[in-house]
Image (cartoon, rainbow, N blue to C red; front, side, top):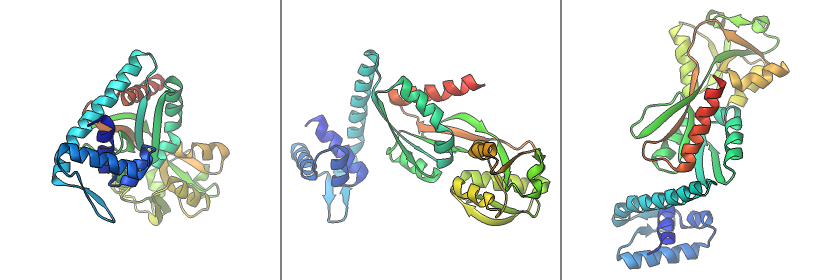
Length: 296
């Protein structure tokens, strides 16, 4: 038994595919199959049930996978620790982020992090919040970036930013000349919002209901760019996170207006498992928190 066999065992179990595990490790699928067969022969148990369409862990495989994952985590941590001792941290971070955070918040943090730690490989993917929680539970990512974080068992939540919500309207809209608006000004207006299953959309809907404001929903979408384009086209107004319309405000393609009422800002958080984080992930947390503290 060797570490390569254990890593392939973990990779196949997580991806449920010999071919995906092969691509992730830059080897051929037959090589993966051979390594797994050698491991099974040495252990004296079958680890996977293989069919033409899917790969699933056997009961024995289920019993062993968590131990194999622990061994691989310890090996990765050991390599990361050695790189720290040498003064040049290395390793990998897998992070999933919701689009509005990844596109409008993450850039400056990521630039600073990669400048400080050029030998750490950063794998970034865009997902919605629900998928991010699922990926964390399945250990397919190391951390997630979401808005309005949920407290879930086994998750460590670090809120590192709070973003004001503002009103965005077309430049020809009657409200466009105002510097501030009251939520009462939205009564009966055509309105564009995030879908209800998006936490930001749910929070905006809650704010309107708390203030007894009824709007005419003409469109919902889970993509901030689609919402902005609809507002620019004059289809309706939208309440959005301030940073997502900063460029439009500067270019004067949208009127961005502050809301008079003291509505809660949008919290943005880094989610990770409560268990011991990798050295690269801890370094990334330090950059997030340190950059934000320097702003305050």
